[in-house]
Image 1 (cartoon, rainbow, N blue to C red):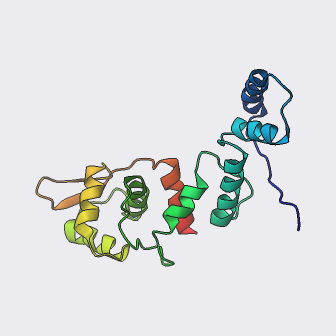
Image 2 (image 1 turned 45 degrees about the horizontal axis):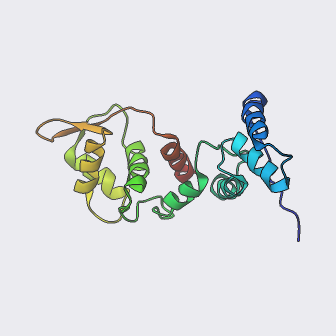
Image 3 (image 1 turned 45 degrees about the vertical axis):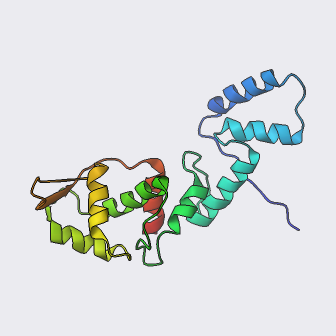
Length: 177
């Protein structure tokens, strides 16, 4: 069986050396192989080596890119991508609150920027991007989470220009490709 290769990448080697030095100083003994792997993984932002490997494997499946962005949980990204079909439409409304917001960010990204939309126009865009036929739920969630604004009478909607969180941005990118 071929040996697995796990590329180790750090933007700033000094940022890796500091936590590694602290971990080695607190260790009190010469660390073994697995303990050293865990220390190296923690130095680049993973919880342990197993987490580092899982992130790398999920990142490879999701983006096919060479380096791992440890700011994004690629296992969670893979889980979130399952809410969308091959046409990149939302299949169902997630029951978990932590899964709802990244899915809303995907819908938010499909609303035109700096354009006033009527409620029927927003409904049409939402219908085109989900399968469970509840645009009212999606409009309400987008409004409550500050992703869109609307007039008091509900006639005009406008996307609020904000930067999505890292996980949501990665989900948007993965669904574009």
